[in-house]
Each structure stands twice: as structure tokens, then as C-alpha cells.
Length: 233
Ligand code: CA
Image (cartoon, rainbow, N blue to C red; front, side, top):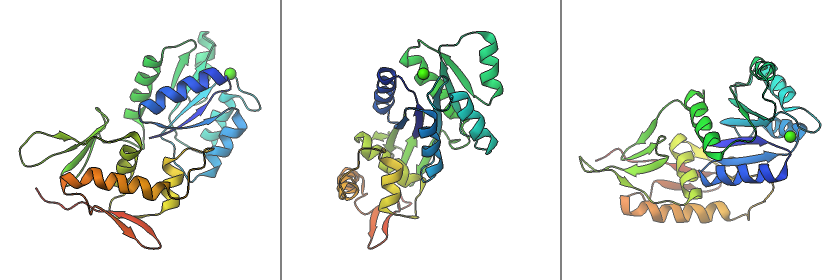
């Protein structure tokens, strides 16, 4: 899941980004309102959630929010702010915020609020995504392999392997290009090496091999990759 974080305080931005990354979110961090707008306008990546600070250089978080709502963008947005007067909350909610968190706050509360927003997100409705014998459980944020009536086995994956498999599961049977994977799953700013996608896919194939999945991710030469799971038990 990809989050657009807009926060101009470097320490707080860094702390939020670190916490969210540890919880398997992919975070693009913009440090002012205009940068956030340019991230949104690039459009190649779809954000699941937004976290906007209220007081931002160049364009206030609240104006950024009004701007995207005028364009009918339904992105669920949580507003962060030191403002805790009731009338400010009303202004924030009326501008189209989905939730509101007053600084200072604890990371556990931020994560819980994001989970609640996710459940209401137009982009993520199912609690589970199952393909053949593998199931992504959004509650546990884990991927399981199920064989017959036996117990579910957790597939142990690194964060990037997990994100890659989640993306493939959501786009199964489609041809997914390398650029698509780069723009969806890698953050802006740290340009990855050109072979990073191929390397990650090689690792993921090795992890899936014990479950009969060595051929689930096919390389389509000159185009990209295609993920297909056999429907068998
Ligand atoms: Ca600020």
C-alpha cells in the first residue's frame, strides 16, 4: 500500500516514514504542499492513503486537500495538526478530510487510524485476497499458503518481496512492466539500480518454489512479467 505523506518537519516526517515503512507501507514523503501536488499529478502511482500536515510551506495541507477534492479525487486523507480547537477540526472535516490527528500523537494511534481508513478505502475493500492456494490476509498483513484442509502456512517474505507478491496478486494474469513495478513499489528519490526488479523477482521465485510456485511469475521477454497461479489443491 502506498501512502502520500506531506510533512515539513524533518524529524517528524522521518519518524513517520520509518514507522510506516516498518509496517509494510510504501511511503512517498513530500515536504511541502506543491511537492505533494506534483507527486499526485505524476499519476503513475496510485496512493491508498494520504497523511497531510495542516501547516505546510507553499500550499497549506488544507488547501491541498480542497484542491484534490475539487478534482474528485477520493483519496482517504488524515490531517495532522497542532490545531485542536473544535472549529479547526470542523474546517478540516468540511474540507474533505476523513480523519484528524492532533500533534503530538503516538505512532500506535497513527497506525490504528490508518488501518481504520484503509477499511473504508475505495481502493481496498476485501479483507482477503486469494489466488489458488495463496491468500493475502489484510488483517494480519501476511501471505499464507493453504494446502487441502491443512493449516495455513505463513510464507516468510522480506518487505519488498511481500510488496511485490501483493502487487502481482492484485494484477494476476496481466502483463506487468518493469517500469510499472519500479514506479509502484519503489520510492521516489532513491533511484534503484536498473536490475533491482529482476533481482527481487529472482528472490521471490526462490521463496515461492517450496509451494510449487517457481513458475508463477513468468518473464515475458521485452514486455515484463506475468503472474499466474494454478488453481489446484
Ligand atoms: Ca507543519
